Length: 78
Image 1 (cartoon, rainbow, N blue to C red):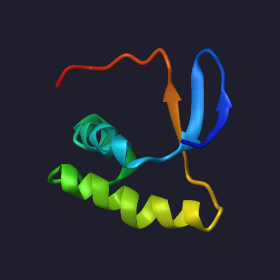
Image 2: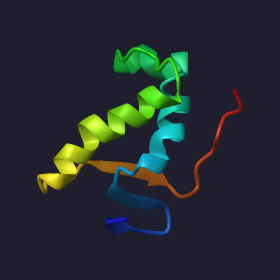
Image 3: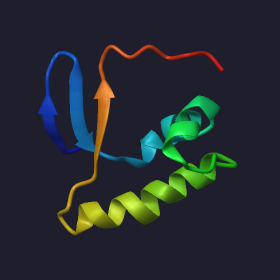
Image 4: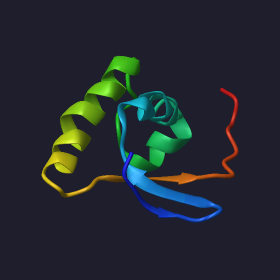
């Protein structure tokens, strides 16, 4: 995992396939997609495909696609 910036409350790094479940949950939340304009994923495989087909090629071309995580994140129960 390539980390670009890390503080006690922030982690800035490249996307990984293990992020698919978080993507899926985030993009299944109607309150989230209401503002992003995205279409909700139908399943976890669609989230994985986004990472493999969109994010990974940018990383290989040295244009890093970053993901920001709050270390102290509050996860809402669905």
